Image (cartoon, rainbow, N blue to C red):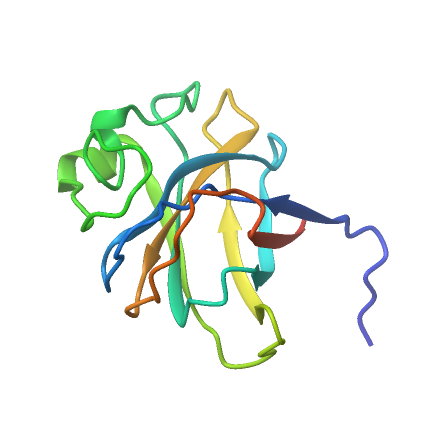
Length: 169
């Protein structure tokens, strides 16, 4: 029998700003957001999404280490939407840009459960994705891409989608 003694766990919440628009499959839901996970990195074990917009069906979360040994934030030109910042357009990142910011993983999440009255909830477990910041950093970056045609919503807001990232050391 194995034990979890000595395994450190943490839950990190992010609330991305979403663009009010007629989004479509393969549109950027949100561009790179910093997530401080510690300089030793960790294993992403779970992701839970509370979608207060109640319009999503599937989203892909993409992770990168940032630029250089310092792991600085990707520039606007290195965004999932080249120079646009918030999203609401088709993914537009080159292979060279993806390598420069060190894209290091992704997961697809389909909203298959938790249809609440005013929101949707989805949980994905047993992910096991190892994420390690750049050598001189304690931060990774996360972006989101719609993988289904979401319903249009009518306001630019934050706090209506909460993403909970579960990590183990």
